[in-house]
Length: 394
Picture 1 (cartoon, rainbow, N blue to C red):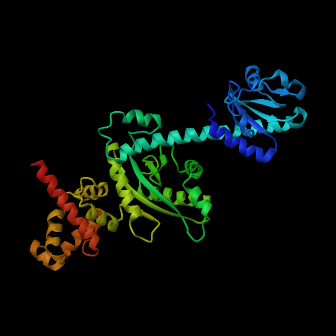
Picture 2 (picture 1 turned 180 degrees about the vertical axis):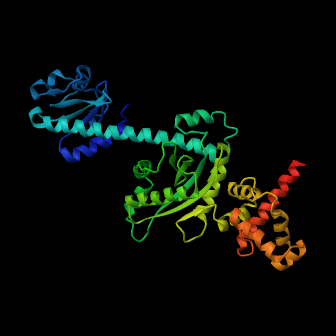
Picture 3 (picture 1 turned 60 degrees about the vertical axis):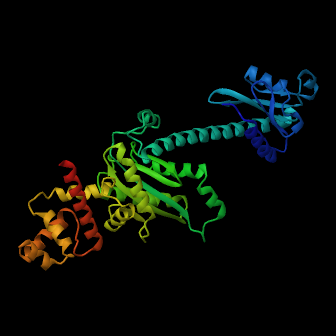
């Protein structure tokens, strides 16, 4: 790791406010890159170069200064990072007076550098994750030639079914301090959030989490989320963990549909995004909720091909088969403005027979078109989708 001059000067400025001695940081060639004595920056310090060459502490007394080019009395310690010397830190003063201070400064400087390196790795990893999900969410998974390589770099398994879950984190304006609000979008806060989530028992090794466009995004693997109940349980426990970071944090959640392949991830993401933005008093909102799904279809003028939730409803509808003549029954019911008596007459069946069929529709699909307007819209969407598929098969 090469220490930048800007970062080194920040470390020097911070440490000098604590130790009350001049602090220098030198690179491995002995050039001072940061100092409390600005006129010494970019000058050669022979003591610093000696500390690198000998890989050990160097102490310079007043009587020895003339033997060291560019030096003042002080103690120079090599800076070690992952068992490699990356520079030297020195504290100006007679060695007996600053010896312990210099060792402390060395330790603190190494901690600063370790932290900076960790954050750099974190930013790089998060950037690579963002590039991957950008491809997936933009519906480019079928055309991206390097998708497998991108996924492998961030340990993302493309072969697993997943569901996209979005968490929006917002402070309560009246109770949340301004500095906390600023920290909310900082790398450190995001790192804390991701660490907290990833340490949860319900977070599987194949789950994928990152911040994407200001929302916490989790691509939950099917290993842990094979049912709506498990997804909701995971989401509820995640909200509780997030609020451990700050109890005054507002958390809203949008859940998309389960995907079977990478090319469907973008659909699940847009469904989750719509559910997240849907005006509702509920904290957790899912595209599988019929009122949200119906509005999603309406606002997106969606015929069903790009809506995984509608496809799921249609598959449950088709699982009923032809036993109850449900397709004709529903079409007639909709054509007659959901009037049960009129529909039964048009179909030449008893009213109780029609009621039996509608009970089966509720049992298999969960829709009650005669009781809920949104259910009627979804029934119409399923029928339209079935007609389109029939025409395509001709």
